[in-house]
Amino acid sequence: MSLPNPFNPVTSIAYELPQSAIFNLTGQLVETLVNEHKNAAYYSVEWDASRVGSGVYIYRIEAGEYTETKKCVILKL
Image (cartoon, rainbow, N blue to C red; front, side, top):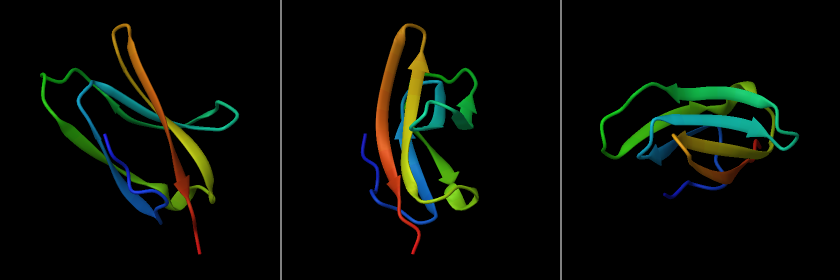
């Protein structure tokens, strides 16, 4: 999985699992991007971060017992 980093204000997150969510560094949920059953395949979802401030954000992808967590940086000029 790759993510343009930093980005401003919209990025696309590629994933192959059924759930994707964005959290701030204190662990608060910022936005759920996808929460539905998907067939096995590669997908991407667009996150419009224009409603949040510059900073480091965590995105987490979950499917059953599998969880993957990565960070992204929003740099607003």
